[in-house]
Structure formats: structure tokens, C-alpha cells
Length: 464
Ligand code: F0G
Image (cartoon, rainbow, N blue to C red):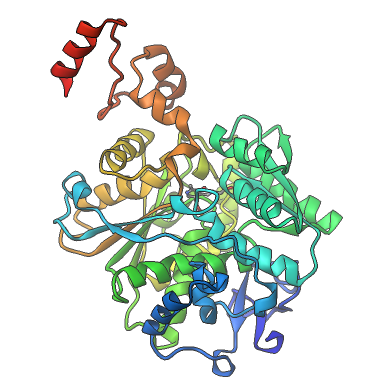
């Protein structure tokens, strides 16, 4: 398989490449990001997406059961014997009529792709199984990541479930929700808390991995993004292989946005879909680098001739002003997204838009998602909050078919949820008020009742 797969520099004019088993993940010529590239003409590609339906009948085979590897013809970088699966990707597209009025959509037009059902509770497992498979292929013994919590939880679970590698995770101190920290600790990862935030941790982990030869599983690793493409394959499957009008996704390190763009671009190239959907990437207002660059500075991919110096100046200014990312959606509390150029490319391929939403909008959207049957963490709800904005602006029509990706499970970050619904003003202020959240619009408060049968019955009759 090796001869049909390689890593290619994303800069079209550069021509830099790496072999499939190279773990540097940056272009040896120009330092840009790499893609996993395939010589499709020499690989067996199905001539219709319907082919993948046949995998359902084979689900006793772990590779057919996995929601990632049952699409293996579309990410054919590793032979079967290297594949490491723990049953990731059992996620399905759900019609969300209950949420339609909140986001001003017509019933039947909104779908949620709920990735909280993965083994570690977030979409990361889609990418981790692919990175982990690649790590096995190259014989890695140790794997590392910087994380706002979900990548680390995912790496930790793959290492502990398979016993094949040691997980080393870098997190910013105080920058990780407890559900996620609990996972890393419980699954036995070496957890390194550094003073600083995700952006600091990301820089350090790259240095350390290079120096110690540790396999890096952050989304700078292009094999991870190969796995994340399958989220979109499952979306298409849920729509009987019809392309939606819009895909709306939260933006942090911009791995998903990049992977989704590549997924659709390749399917289109292969003649498996006729058009690409439009892409909306939603930043938290307190971590809005992509929004600023794309919507306010007009930065575009331009077929690879994107204004690097302009972007560098933007980051220099950010540093000079000591601007740090800050949002209740800690998963996307990131100011230096490593996949920025790939995300710009995806926005070009998919005629994308970028929006920012406040923590207030995020938490209100999250409460609405919860009230209608799916539990997600704050960062995930940015997609729904972003859709609401885009509907109010008229960018998305009420009758267009829209898929919002819910990236992580509700129980990842119970603090934000409890503070939102709490009757305790001090807790609200401590967790949310200081972030500019003024009103828990959809709070479902616990009712305080003395331990007295009559009082309890009275309360139930009053409220339910
Ligand atoms: N949603 C959740 C729940 C996440 O954990 C992340 C990223 C994102 C959205 C953003 O996705 O990076 O592809 O744009 N979490 C990373 C982590 C950074 O370390 O767990 P992205």
C-alpha cells in the first residue's frame, strides 16, 4: 500500500513530500502542513457510496463495525493488520425537529451529528484510531498530545484499552474540564500540567516530541484528520448519501473543519458526490482568531497564495498585547489554531463562512440542545448558537438542510451545566458571571423542599 500513499505539502507550488511512515508531519522544504495523499487510480475505490451499506451485514468484523474503518477505502493508508479500533464512530445523524424553532429553521431541515457517543465521549476517537493505527505502523512506543481535554482523554483510552503505547499528555493548568481530566487520570496517562494555556502546551509538546522521538497525535498529524473525515461520511449515510446544504462545526484547533473539507473535496474528485456542502465554522468570541482573520481581515486561501505575512503580523500583535483565549467553552479556548491554513482551504472549497458566538449564546444553545434530548458540552453547542446567528442574518435559509456537529458529551464539563442551572448566585458568578454570561435564559432550577411529605407533594403538583 505504501507506494500509493504519501504525505504531500498543502502548498500547491511547493512539491514537498514525505513517505507514509515519516512522523515529522511538516513539509521538509517549506515547513507547511502536510496532507495524506493517495494515488486513487491505483487503489480500489467503490464506484458508489452505497457500497458502504454492505458493511452493516459484516459487523461481526471489528473493522466493519467501526464507524471509521468501515469506510477504509476512503482512508487507505494502512494495511488491515495495523488497524487499531475500539469501536469508535458508532454515531448517527439525528433529526432535531424540537430545536428548529429555537434556531428559526423549518421542521425537518435540522440534523445533529452527535459525536458524544464515542468511547471517550467526543469526536476525537475518529481521529485517534487513525493516528494510533499510523503510530503502530511506524512502531511508536510513546504518544503525546497537548490538549484542552478531549484529545488527551481519547489518547489515554486508546493506550489503556490496547496496552500498546504509553500516553503522555500536556495540559494547561486550570484549563481542562473535570470530566476530561478524570478520564486522562483514570486511563493512566502521564499527565503533565504546565503553567500556561493550550497554546503554550501545543508549542511545548511539538518541541518535546521532536527531541524525544515521541509520536505526536495532535491534529497537526495528518493521519488523525483522515479518521475525522469519516464523521462526514456518516452524515452522508444518515441522509441516504445526499449532500446537505450546510455543515456547521465549532472551530478550535480547526482539525474538524480541515478534515471535513478534505472529505468532501476527495469525494467530489472521485465522482462520489456531485457538489460540496457549504461550511460554517463557529468560534467562541473569546477565542476568535479564524473569525477575525477570515471575516474581518479578509484572509483567504487563494489556491495556496494566502497572506502569510499578514497572518504572522496578526499573531505578533496578539502576543504583544498579551491576548489570551478565554471562553467557557474550554475545548475551543485556542488562539493559535495549528490547522489554520488547512481550514482556510476548506473554507474555499466549501464556500465557507465563519462566525463568533458569545459564552451566553453558547450556554443558552447548550441548554436548548439538552432540553430536546441530546447532552453536549459547551464547545459543541457553539455550532447550534452559530446556526441561530446565521439564520438571523439570513445567510442560511429556513428551508436549507443543515447539519450541526455536536462534538462532545454533556458529562465532559458538568461544572458549566450545573452553574447555569444553579440557584446559587455565587456559583453562577464564579463560573459564568465573570465571563460575561448575564442570564441563564433556560435555567431548570432544582426546587428546594423541606423533607416533608406534604411539602414534597405540593411542590410536585405546583411544578409538574
Ligand atoms: N469540540 C470539542 C468538544 C473539542 O474538544 C474540540 C477540540 C473542538 C470542538 C474543536 O475542534 O480543534 O478540530 O477545531 N479539542 C481539542 C482537544 C483542541 O485538545 O481536545 P477542532
